[in-house]
Length: 137
Image (cartoon, rainbow, N blue to C red; front, side):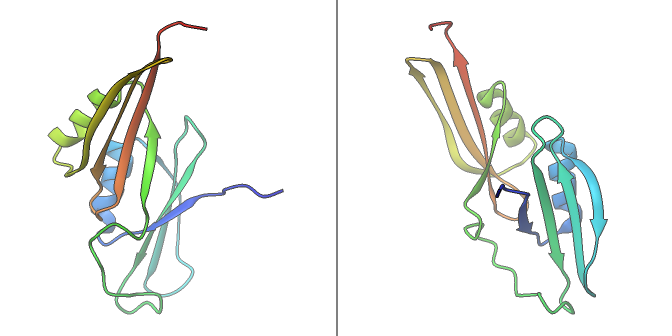
């Protein structure tokens, strides 16, 4: 059997990234470790879904270090399902998160759909998506 264990993203500023993912997105720190000099790994958990995210930081003296490219395209995006994507998107923009893609809203046969993207401190796109049902079967 094979299943996704976690998603790992390389971060440039560990403290800013940790604040974003714990304080702003509500993930919980479950482990901190290092397998080699200059490396820091912080494992985070979304207690609601059980999904895990590892923040990977490599100092310049680490053998895995490469110069930072702040374009965020190395990882396409992370998507979070939320109750109200419009509200969540607006809250993150008000907190200073740069907009990666404006909020999209549309009515569907199943209700109302909304989705928008901001950037985390590393330039990675973070999506918020919601679908409200109209009660149709």
